[in-house]
Length: 502
Image 1 (cartoon, helix red, strand yellow):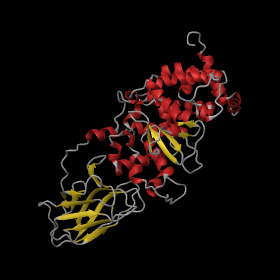
Image 2: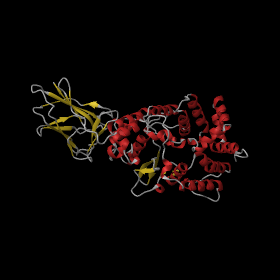
Image 3: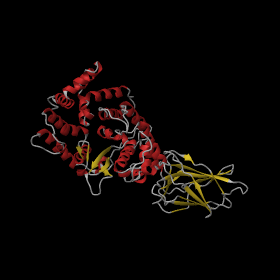
């Protein structure tokens, strides 16, 4: 094909077949600009190749994909991010060629704003370190969230405030999306406003549907490629990891064969993901994509969804493409999914992971000039174990405490150098971060005596001080903090406690 220069004709035929002459004519007749875009597309081998190689536009809306791609590229800066942003631009144009709406609304997702959101987040180092190195095909699944852009931003900010340790989980299968297990309660969902939001999902919980929605949302907020799936009576998600694509929230013992999403079988998607990872884009294009184009030219169509991933003697070119894809998939290795290389941006998450020091001593108590005492929450002397309590470094500096459930407690012994003014009353506050509307209050016992109650606010993932309460300090030496066990008692992040003289 390359030698006899038939490639251009084959690509054009495939694009016209998939987009249909009627579809192109309708788009071109909408304006002179649209007509010019169609002409440009059908005479640009490189752009047609990119579109076909990376799965084609949603709804086969080639004209609209060309329009969106052209508009994004027109505003692209030629800096060190240009090569990556060019792939991201194509991914956005292809994935949103057919208009999509935001979660629980009729508001159409703005393609250029979606590109801009991820481009800026990447430039600022807010996304997963692997984001720089994904392919266009993978970028499509990383940016295709139905969440509004402000909720995507909230997702990143919230997790790095509330539970940054979830962004560092060693098993990448659960990185980011472990929050579904820890915080999205399995129960009837509690919707508190319309339209529904992802803040409501994590706060109000839900069963298989809302939990899988949130898992996909939080992974994509950090730029992780995700493919959703449904099974018999179940919804879940699959995601890219450096060791390959893995299933999350699937039925026990189930595999890709029992999964499907929209009009595609899980086994078909998984084989394509394996094949693409195993070889270079150029090799996949030459030995799979062009065979698929030949199948289009010969009008070889799958009549049923179930036929998509299986060979058929009546569809010779389509079957050859599948067999070649299978050969590639069988050659994949764990290293095939590594996404690393020379970095063009310093990932804040990667930097945070590198700076974690498990052997760092606890931060000291701080005595202020006016007599106040600040107790770093992670500097406890006793707790009931890592199953209930976590102390770790905060994203952005310092340390924090995470009470995982209602059974958690921590105890602080005040050092000898911390003293209190005997003639003063003290007010106690805590700096907290929460993601659930319903909160169990925090109880504090002073020297095993009277228990005081601190009202915990719903901070929607931001750091906030609690309302101060008056406490009797006397000869204070030991403080114990805990909550009452309850079904709706989820995580509570605490930065510090402050005792201030009145």
